[in-house]
Image (cartoon, rainbow, N blue to C red; front, side):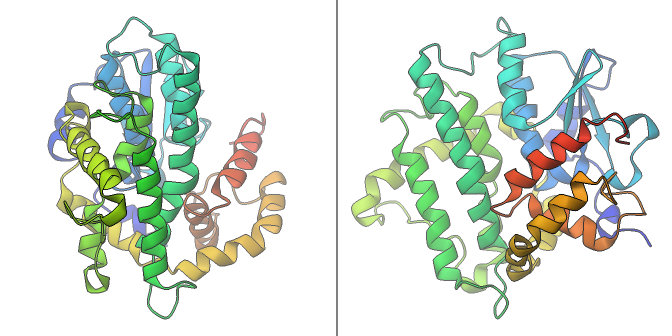
Length: 325
């Protein structure tokens, strides 16, 4: 039986498709990824925007993970950047690599000052470890199934956005000032999709971020957030790597319908799952038919659970084994 996600819309659309079509020619640098990711789970958009900002020649390769070409089976987890036929993954690592490998191309994305560079890494990690998990806990809220009320999930997510804004340079519009840096593009793919809360959680009050002048004691922070968001939404590299909204809605509904309590229950199972990963069982490819639907569900959920990074590190270590297929 085909996995239900295998029938989702299979390509980038709109401005993202136009950008993709410009990068079909063979290049030593290749961006290869699940098309599902560019619709909603846009870790890949972090890398794609960096490539566009720096003007680095690259080849764009879209892959349906449920019908992955044989030649890509031995790559590390998608999305993958191939550099001289050597794979790299983890979007923040890839962003820093591109800055180091192509220092003379386009915009400088890492501050020259060591302290500022370290600060950028701290807040990039904050996005991955705090903002993104709280985004998905909020989005996945289901009445009667979630372990926490939606008001608490919303408050936690909005508090993370506010903390991110408070760490920004005062004038902006970007995190470190007039020009964007890597930390801006680490946050951007989720910031530009905040509309999903007003769409999928409208009956529960939607996103609920304070409107202009309504931020109370935190109005300064929310004003800075709004300024940053407006700037990042208008950045050409963001607009030109984002698919049409209507094509994102079906995939987004799949995520919003995942019961949160199932994801929380994964924490209790993490030891046995980690052992299965280390023993190289059933996880040879999460999209191949011999993996069960439960295996696929768990891998999807790991991406958004608090323990996601721990499991991904374990998984990444296994993928470096020679026998990994």
